[in-house]
Length: 318
Ligand SMILES: Nc1ncnc2c1ncn2[C@@H]1O[C@H](COP(=O)(O)OP(=O)(O)OP(=O)(O)O)[C@@H](O)[C@H]1O
Image 1: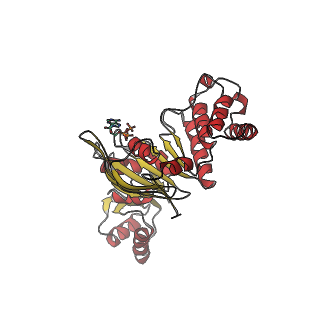
Image 2 (image 1 turned 180 degrees about the horizontal axis):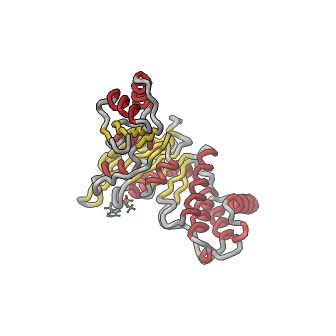
Image 3 (image 1 turned 60 degrees about the vertical axis):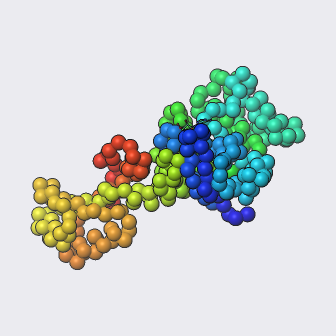
């Protein structure tokens, strides 16, 4: 094993003349959450379908769970679980029957199947509803059942294609918690999402897919540093302090009315320290210091050529 759960090099896929994936490289270390982020039609689902053996690639050196997708798709299938946008849950039968069906598909002995089903239903808070037809479940319950079904085969790598689309905020948070717990247990998760907040919350690394290519890749923090707009805002109550600070930081833009200075800054510790050192040398202390870092929305719009980057984003008062 390489320590990489997923390694894709030069992944290509076209449908007719339409190039959907145009040489995508991805590496996902074991036990981490990787998020593929992109606008509608960017190719996220196609990438997941290829990496989970449902669709064949036109080209690329692709390994999942240490197995070559081209030569050993069966071994890949044994290592993975997939929860797609379209649920595998059968609404006509109960939650428990859905689970037992999965246990049968994985050839678990009957008693073992019952044990695993009961354990997973309990873990996903579905024991009370286990005897009810799945069609009566809420969206969040169906999604939990879907993941529980995926876990019957104890996959080490799980592909989650837009796992929280359509869920209310509470169910979304429950799902995030479930995903975090999976990873704590050593599972690797590749997650596609259109929700920047979701990638920001969960992912160790994020790749922004646009027009079939990776437009940028990194941790949420690294990606946020790629787009301009970060700054530090210092506010003073004493006009004399304000004037001293303004002369110590001549590049700052001034707001004389509010006694506030705004200095371009990427929010990194190094750049922040540089500003604070210069204030120290001038013998002044700001009454309020606010770091504005661009959020993932800014990154997404900047990288995917969307509409103008909206100005307001998260502010962190330090
Ligand atoms: N079987 C297919 N035949 C032809 N074109 C396809 C096929 N599957 C996908 N495509 C096209 O490939 C492009 C990428 O689709 P894909 O579903 O991978 O995007 P996505 O990023 O998952 O989008 P969404 O967020 O809307 O699910 C789209 O333009 C889609 O129309």
